[in-house]
Length: 392
Image 1 (cartoon, rainbow, N blue to C red):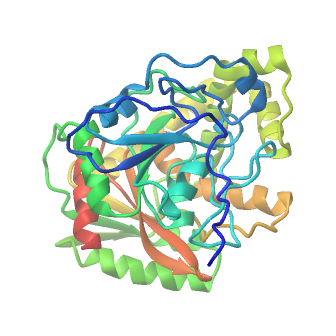
Image 2: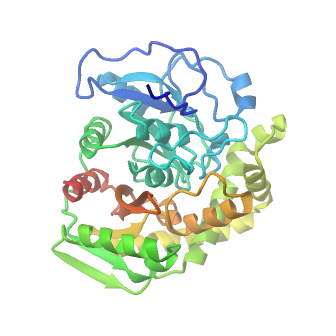
């Protein structure tokens, strides 16, 4: 008999019987909730022992999670995340790294690491996540899952830990598109604009962001599969701005937002952080109001450029991240370099607030490799339906 693998993905909390509807459109499904969203009966630990030590037992449930419960889903527990959600790799210095069933020698990605681990292992049907820099999209790509970064502001973030509110988004994972659609139909109204997403935009320079020839080959194969679902496509050499500009703009604006949100808590408690998170908090503290003002102006320009590019009826296709998940044995320097490479791709939706869905269409080095579709503002439900067509 095979020994069950310890996923290290659940928070070590006493099990609570969270009230849920006896019947509804999500009946029969099970749910894990990332430990930044409040759930009645549980503490909200934010991936850090210092926060957990002061956390009270919550008496209200986060609104989107409550919608799921009211639709009949059963909450099994809360899932691990990275410290204050301020990382993309999934290796929490206090709690360790959850297990990636889709690539056991590799990381899950983060900060929604526990949720991604649980879905990849088939422990639950649905798991909530959040996305600021890419914490829905990167773990989904690394673990072979479906994950949507919704249009910024479309789903409530009340009763949640805030990291950088002008970037933060609610999200969730599922392995299959049918389950993903069921959740979307529960937590999202139909798109206000029903213009069909009929045009595909292909940007040649995206392949230059990939790590090597195997990734280029895999991306080309996935691109062919996606292109078959569109009547027309438009091919561009490059975006109307550089990836370097996008990264610098994102880092400046996110860092300033993070310190404005969490700086007082960090300063008052002086908690211990892992090296990567500690470095990012030091940077966040150093960003001036003038640097943010200039960065925010650049963010608005990038938002306008991407919005003009997709218009009302187009979808931009791109690799979710440059490769599969890093190996568990990768050192901090290599992880830092790869994180910055990831942000070159992930920052586009984060800066613009446009919705992006990643699909488990590719594989490289024996591990999952996600491909994304970025659509017009408010096209979330149509993106999910388009994903269902592509994955059929």
